[in-house]
Image (cartoon, rainbow, N blue to C red):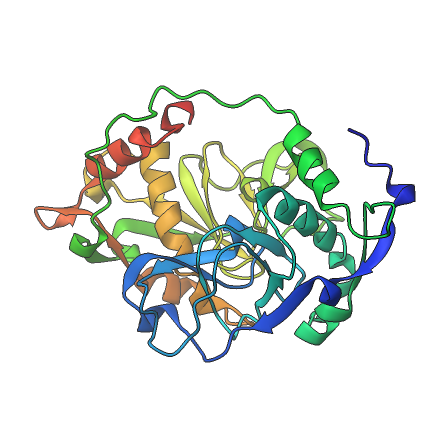
Length: 333
């Protein structure tokens, strides 16, 4: 199927969606862990910063599935489950006035994201502005959005599914977060700083240059300078995209907006990518604490308390490794 974008017509979002903003000031710390996604601003993980109990904080509104969320930076995601949204992240909820589904929702999200260039450098997108936003879409002969075309186009996109030997296996492995125990990051890892290297001083090469970004495993560039940090470590942004944690398998250079976590020998086990990926997922749950200009500075990072599976008073590293291996596609890591 061809998109034929020159033939698309302009439509106003508010004509096809009711736009709401989450009310109240729901904070993840005020809620019990659960299965309901909590949506905040962000460009990854479908906007999800955690999962909370269905009761929420007892005040915030729960939104029904089959909506689109758009944050202040114009990051748009289709939500296929009931969810909560934070208000301090200015998450706008677009509830369709028509019969929407996953494919149409994904198509609309991709179009809305094309407007992101208008909202950089401190300019935020507000609910009233989203309602007035004009986007181009495929249209029917009677000049209405061609929802069927959008649905069929998304369905037609060809891809080769990844296979996994883990599907349906290890079903007995559960997270059991209610039994996790608190540990201090500084007790488990030595935290070291990155070092500034301006773009003008960078040369072309093969050394991964880790920046404070939220994609591409943190790799912003490849440089000719030698690595300043070892591989088999975790990079953790304290500025920029604060709280983005990535496992770095090879030696690298980290910018000064990134700290690097070295696994302590006192932990008594060999650090590996499976344990690292588990820890990265846990660390990212802390990122909501450091939004809107608050930096996760070195001393604060060292003293951060995280919860982990425990055995005999110590982190259960073996369980973390086996849990990651047991996940669907865990055998593809």
